[in-house]
Length: 267
Image 1 (cartoon, rainbow, N blue to C red):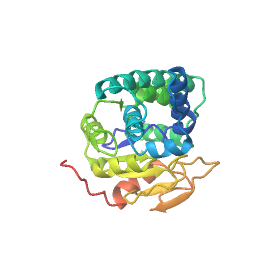
Image 2: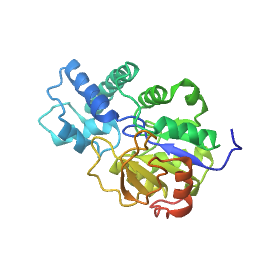
Image 3: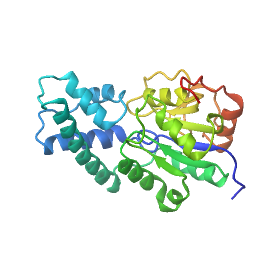
């Protein structure tokens, strides 16, 4: 392993480590709604709109606001019911992950291991529930690589969820790095906005629900991180791929050659 460098690769979880939203979270939400005898199911179209809101509990509360005919009681009662439903949904989701239903996206394990071998810190920053994120991470990279990762920052540990930059600002502080030392991998408009607001250069790997999202501040937009046998498709931005895949050298080029987004919050 090379000597440690002041660099970090920070990855979102859902849609980045695995394409979890359609085949994981949406399935788990709808199973939970059935178990609890709630009078609705989310379609893929509805869920695509809800994904613009960071956090599962927040999506459920937003849905209730959109449908006042659904009587969940007082705001306090509704919040309690949503919290209980989300706890069960998280358990269902972890069961799906542990069953192997959500394979890692192309290039994710390869790039994480290459960055670690090059001395980079690697972290995951997500506003999904910590237990869910940890389950996906372990499933995608395995226990040996998970043990080398600097940390997972997830869930309700920040005041505001994406597209607010809070989770990325916290992760940078915990890693002891500035925005100029890190590259983020995101997949959604909300996540990219969060990275940009924190002044972080970011790669976007579009996922099932995000191919039409705008990513004006992304250093590069690609189909995925790519594998040697299955190169990533270049979509927009600076084409930093090497032989069709995103590598550690690609990350270095992003830091040295592409401008940082203008942070919208104090450093």
